[in-house]
Amino acid sequence: MPVNWISLLGLDALLARWRASLNEVALAAEDRVDLAQLEWQVHKRSLQTLLILVVALGGLTVVVLTVLSIALMVQFWDTAHRNTVAWCLAGGWLLIWVLALWRLLAAVKQLSEPFKLTRSELKVDWKTLKEKL
Image (cartoon, rainbow, N blue to C red; front, side, top):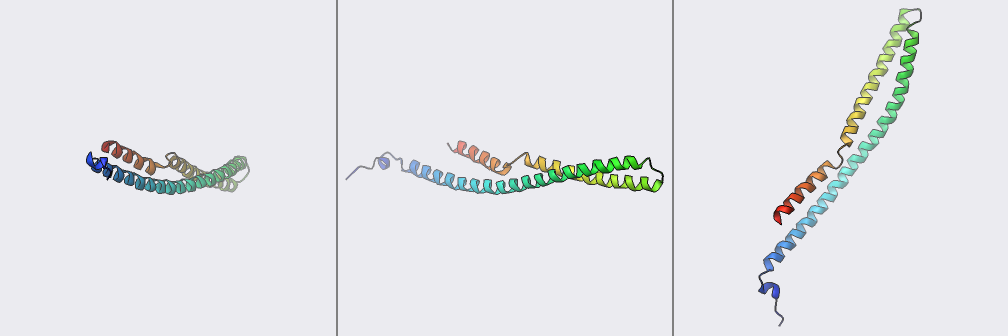
């Protein structure tokens, strides 16, 4: 009959703790991968929104500059109604452009911290693991 050295040396409890820790680490790793996948989907959608906003802002910039140029030219025409209409149009386009720029900057700020939740969870996991060891 072979001698069970692990049991004889009292390492059963240590081995059981290591197995439990490895199982816990495996489960935590699965959870973190799932979280990273979810955050990647959110990040990808944000990148798509950013691309659409950049294209829209580029188009609106062309329109704003065109309308502002026309408004400046019309400013020197004969009637006061032409001036009012041209400046109202220019102001409206400028307002739309400013709103698009504001939304673009908000999207860029949101993209500046990708995988924030995953990094936070991994930091907590690493701290917990270091404390256990």
